[in-house]
Image (tube, rainbow, N blue to C red; front, side):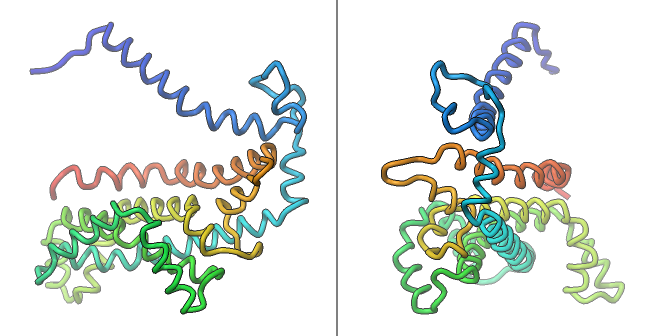
Length: 278
């Protein structure tokens, strides 16, 4: 039986999606508009939805009065290294969980799922104590290691699903032709799974790029701050610097938007790779 959408139903669906789109995009629009307003116009009455006189004062002051370039570099370095390392490790762990049977496999998978449901602040005390004893507090290396540990469980489960949907016959044929198991993995399976791997890397990168709670806790010195921590610094006990904070938020969102724009094809292919068996 073929379901045909009626005209009223189509109108309702389009109207609902239009309202949802406006509600979703309005916060981003408002932050962008605020970043181009002069400090005196942000809360001027009557409230305007467009700058009376657009200015780059907030952006200029952002770089002139703070080490914003350093914050961008720290976030880019930490997020890229952590996401790339976690993705590479998860390729091996996801492959093992998809292709081999061993004692404790079900428990290990359950543990990976459980870690996604446990709030980070529960492990903050032991984590901070461990990082202190390792002398990794307030270091980019320490933050990278923490992010890697956070990303691996999610990425492993995600890539395991992709490996499970790749036919065993592909690597078996490669091994018959003389490839080792590792050679078959990287020469045959990984190229087939590249959309899923790219999608996993992007999700890891965005999670690390936007993470605030752990970076605020583990980072103290100004030269090691990441972007979310630096933006959080615009909020003090008695004042909120709305203009610079809005400008910083816009500059923080732009890289992830560009990343999703250029890699959208890979993300869609990766997320739909497991929809069809084989």
